[in-house]
Structures are given as C-alpha cells and as structure tokens.
Length: 340
Ligand SMILES: Cc1ncc(C[n+]2csc(CCOP(=O)(O)OP(=O)(O)O)c2C)c(N)n1
Ligand SMILES: [Mg+2]
Image 1 (cartoon, rainbow, N blue to C red):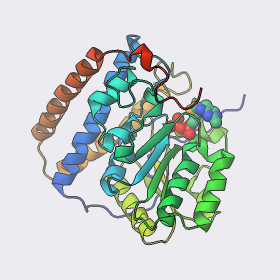
Image 2: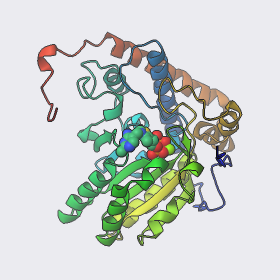
Image 3: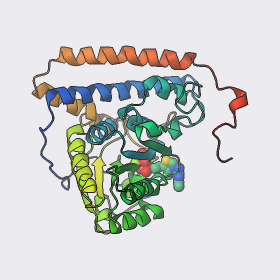
Image 4: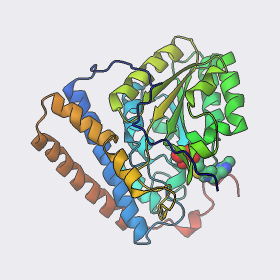
C-alpha cells in the first residue's frame, strides 16, 4: 500500500506570508487568551460528556484550531455574516455564543440556542451573524457567497466569512463559488482551516497540490497562507481581507495552517496518526504560542493562571446548567422544522 508522505512540519511553511505582528496590545491579547481557554475548556468538557454517553449523534471538536476563531472574531464586526462546518463550536463561542446555551444544545436540551434540535453539527444564531454550521462538506461556502451578494446589492457594509477544511477544497461547488465571488467582487472571505487531514486521510494522499491557497489564485483571487495557530496573524489577515471586501476590492482567500489535536470526532480511535506526531504539534498549538507572546509582553504566569481558574469555574457552571436543562417538549417536535 502506498505510504502517505505526511507533512509534519511546523505550522508556518516556507510559503507562509509574514504579516508582521505586534499590533495588538497586552490587554487585547489577554482578552483573546481568555476566549481561547474558554473554547478549549468547553470542548474538553464536551469530550468528557461524550465519553460518558451523554451526547447523542456525532460531535467534532476543534482543539488546536482556536486561533482561527478568536482572531477572526476580533477582526470582524458583530453583524458580519459567518458560516462554518460541523466543526464550529469554536467559531460560535468566539462570536459570543453563551457557553451555557451552547453546551445545552450539544446535550439536546431545551435551553440550547436551537431548543436542543440542532445539536453539535448545526450551531446557528443569526443575532450573532452566525448563519449556520453545515454537515455537508463545502455546502456552507456558497451560502456565504449568497449573503455577501445580498449585502452588495443592498449597499450594506456587511461582509461574509466562511470557514471550511482542507478536505473541502476539491468539492465542485467550492470552485463554482470561487469563480463567481471573484468575478462579481463579492465582499467575502474564504478561510480554509488546513489541519492536514480530511477525516482520517492525510492531505498528501488525496492531492498532489498541498499549498491550498494556490487554488484561489487560479480564479484571480487575492490569497495568502498564514500560521493559523498564531491568533495575531489570523487577526491581521482577516482585518486586511475585511478592509479589501468593504472597499469593494472583492474576496480574499486565507489558508490558515493548523493542526487538530483532538480526534476527527468524539470516539475517534486515532489509528491513522502516531502519538509522536500529535505531541510534536503540541509545541505549536495556539494556546502555547499565545502564552509565549504574553510572556514576552511581560505578563506573569500567575495572571494567566487566574484567567484559567476563572474560566474553569464558568465552564463548570455552564456544564451544570446544561445538564439540568429540561429535555425538549415532545409536543414541539415539529416546531421550527422546515424539511423532513
Ligand atoms: C459532501 C460530503 N462528503 C463527505 C462527507 C463526510 N465527511 C465528513 S467530515 C469529512 C472530512 C472533511 O475534512 P476537512 O474539510 O479537511 O475538514 P476537517 O474535518 O478536517 O475540519 C468528510 C469527508 C460529508 N459530510 N459531506
Ligand atoms: Mg481537515
């Protein structure tokens, strides 16, 4: 059997664009740190709940992807549109979703933001600009183009960002969307979270092109490859892409290199990669990278510890809230259901 030549290099490859950095204040970085720790603890708690059989259906966590979500949320306006994949807890929390209602939703409880009917794969909250996660690989991408088109036609300043994985890039609908978004100069951002795997398959086994940002260039689109584990670099890339979109200069494609430290989904047996590979990637993960930056800003470890303790308490309370939330009323089974 052909041996995949798996890329295990550091997140910043030789093609990565150096966007500078050092633009965010210590206070801004601390706010980002808090959010990244919150996302991490919510997802770790969800994995524990899944292990004890309390979560029905598939659940995909984004442990190791927090940099892209938090950098994006800091760079965009609260009413900008966002669509994402089934791996979307981190984007939703970063955009301000209440962790209590997020966990309740994953547990299928009535206090979930969708009354417990959407679950982990269908995070949505239009009041946060969060227009829907999607279980169909690539499907959320043309949706975001439609939102960007509506904004353009109504002369609004709202832009759309859509997140997808490296495995989605070969879907036909992606290329149709790249083409028309570029041609019509739609105010949108394509953000590829390249974690090097599509489910259990390494990228090197499915394509001879590993530099994903190059695909967008074929459609005449501005595109960059960045270290997606560096929250400040994500912030800068999304800020610049948003400025271009709002100025009528069209879409930008961002390939953020990252790594999924958790399994593809809860219960993943992880037979397709070694523990050495995962351990090696831990030194580049977003929280480690941001901790180093905060230390360089002179922040004491005790201050970071205090943030972690505060978040720990918040997440414990959120888990209790969710577990005590009532199950949905059976009589409401068909309410808000549009298709069966
Ligand atoms: C159209 C479609 N084909 C196949 C699947 C099964 N599937 C679910 S997740 C996934 C992998 C996608 O990988 P990637 O886009 O890299 O995202 P990641 O899971 O790594 O975040 C596949 C193939 C699906 N959900 N939809
Ligand atoms: Mg992937």
